[in-house]
Image (cartoon, rainbow, N blue to C red):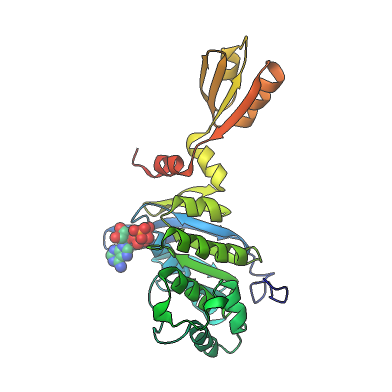
Length: 309
Ligand SMILES: Nc1ncnc2c1ncn2[C@@H]1O[C@H](COP(=O)(O)OP(=O)(O)OP(=O)(O)O)[C@@H](O)[C@H]1O
């Protein structure tokens, strides 16, 4: 990507708009369904955040409120210190929708040019195509583009106003593996330049690979919020294994966060929420060798944190 491309930055007064998103005690019900039930959310400029949760958890309802598409029953949302609608009107927020918004007889380049013509100020069309990874198919008719290419076209359209914040609601649903990979590579390269990205997804691997921060939502509430590694260890801890002789199992069991200690054929397996403390103990106080720390995968954490138990 060429060097003349500018870095995305939130427009407006960043001194007074510390957070890209500041939502306080958001609530939204549909009849008796509490779709969102007290969500507090502060997202700093430059963060790439995944909203992860089972069907009906409240992800789309939350995103709609962040985009000003629906109003909370209670609570407030500020985007760069403004109401969502004001932030959108200032070109500070764009959304990549899953469907719609494309005219099938236009070319890719014409589509982005048409979007750019709607804004008083916009980034050059070729720059948006390049960032979305579709400059090479600028002359292709939209109806001839694959689902993944159409999604990258929506991404290019969202870049026209050079928004500080990009919001994507399940952007890769229905795409094949290659399409998903190309889409996320484009988003990821762009986010590295400083854009704030919030995306909802069902795909645990996408959240794991592309988000700095994962917010796990269940029944309209946030049940976990942290890096992928933090969420994995929060739900299930880690296992520390090592070859050891003459271990004082009681001393290991008494370390903070230890759930279980097993010793078999000279190999100790310790399951703990604080694997660092276990590793430190084994290395400093025993003759442990070949020490390994295994984290559990995000799917284990997701199931543990979103199940009814
Ligand atoms: N317009 C609506 N009218 C009635 N109920 C709604 C409406 N929108 C959402 N709901 C309900 O609110 C709850 C949360 O839905 P929401 O779409 O926010 O969840 P989600 O996490 O995005 O789910 P999914 O992953 O399936 O898209 C669900 O029980 C849903 O049926």
